[in-house]
Amino acid sequence: MSKLKRNERIAAMVKILSDQPNRIFTLNYFTERFNSAKSTISEDIVIVKQSMEKMNLGRIETFSGAAGGVKYIPQTTKINNKKILSKICDQLKNSDRILPGGFLYMTDIIYSPSTTSQLGEIFASQFNYQNVDYIITVETKGIPLAMMVAKAMNLPLVILRRDSKVTEGSTISINYISGSSGNIQKMSLSKRAIKPGSRVIIIDDFMKGGGTAKGMMDMMKEFNVEVEDVGVLISTKSPDKKLVEQYVPLLILEEVKGEEGIINIYPNPEII
Amino acid sequence: MSKLKRNERIAAMVKILSDQPNRIFTLNYFTERFNSAKSTISEDIVIVKQSMEKMNLGRIETFSGAAGGVKYIPQTTKINNKKILSKICDQLKNSDRILPGGFLYMTDIIYSPSTTSQLGEIFASQFNYQNVDYIITVETKGIPLAMMVAKAMNLPLVILRRDSKVTEGSTISINYISGSSGNIQKMSLSKRAIKPGSRVIIIDDFMKGGGTAKGMMDMMKEFNVEVEDVGVLISTKSPDKKLVEQYVPLLILEEVKGEEGIINIYPNPEII
Image 1 (tube, chains in turn brown, cyan):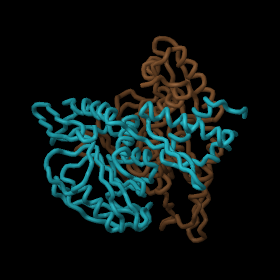
Image 2: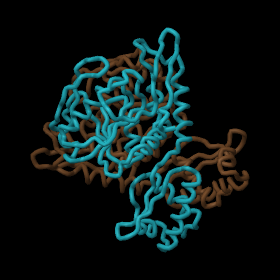
Image 3: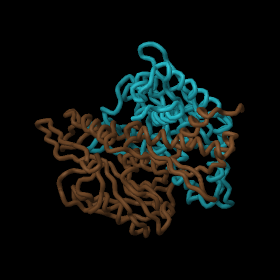
Image 4: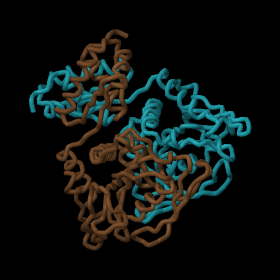
């Protein structure tokens, strides 16, 4: 390979760092991959750092010493959050989305990789996940979002199942009461999915009564795991008191008036 | 904002392009965002293109004319595929993964965002998805992988459900026969999830008899949709004849000998 020019090294460095957020790359990694001196790589990193900061594209952190290196951390601004979340609200306000029972059709939005990857970065900007070990969700609709949060934080995803499966080995199951419907539901998780003593963040697409999130928290207790934060894409404004005390919603759904075709939804004012 | 230097523009451009693969950004987008002349941006693009090519980090394509612009396309090399897939095989060969019934525990691998995002790029490099409209999968285990394929191709994901849900509106359901177990199973999909006449790629984590993939293909017929390709992370070597004729596996599982703790799995030789 011919030696790379500075511009070319910088282009490659941004791609490598941002493909794996929150992973520390040693300077040696780049000196070897780019066939360049350590001092040269250090100068490159300064330029990348400045560019990301000026353009609000995230942060570059450097660590000195033996375990030193550089990592990229996604970080969104409130202005950008507002832009992205308002656009999603505009999409969701279309009265065609109202389903029987006052539900909103939204899988097209929450399964879109370009939308959910932006939402993943917004969630990553709300939480301190320095000491977090896993992202937790429950099947099915929240999985794409939770996966993108996991990607932005570079943490493994764990998916709670509704039933236990032969492909997961021995499982722990719990019953929980869906906060809004009052129905008893079940969730289960492979015993080997989480190390005891870990810390986790719970991510889901929707919260009304908070029963499902509470169920996930109860499940984490079974695994002797601490829940650091709970994030949901949409929480309903009522009931005001949910089964989970602390949670961060990106959007707040105030009401759906099926007959009039009115959907009142807006970004969480605290994050925009 | 102070004017960006070339290095800084290039860093920002790589981040923006690679965050949304396969989306065309106009030159105007960059002239406005970077406050720079068109000729300057064109020169930047040439540098980014050269860097990505030299470092095997993907391709940059430019389009001239009124609808012109630039896009980033993930593209992996056979050497890199081999490295990534061999590493996954090494992880899977651990005899601790063998579950009762000869199943392999692998959710930790297929739910890992850093692994699946690489697998997403490998799949994107196998298929021509120029005219493809959706990535299709069925809940649950294949969703994280399918989401990362969808992200690499910048296509919306559609998830087939085992049961119909109130949050999806009216659905079409089919019954299909699981190729390996012979059991009758059900899958359903919201009628508004896919536009008739579309083209899709099916992605799943595992194929033995091919019954589930065949079920997804049958479902696509109900929607008057053409299946362009089928990709699976792992296909078993036997049965040799599966219910789906054309499919691309990344890994081939030859055998699992539970008693001896032997797992024989290797990368598909055609893609490494």
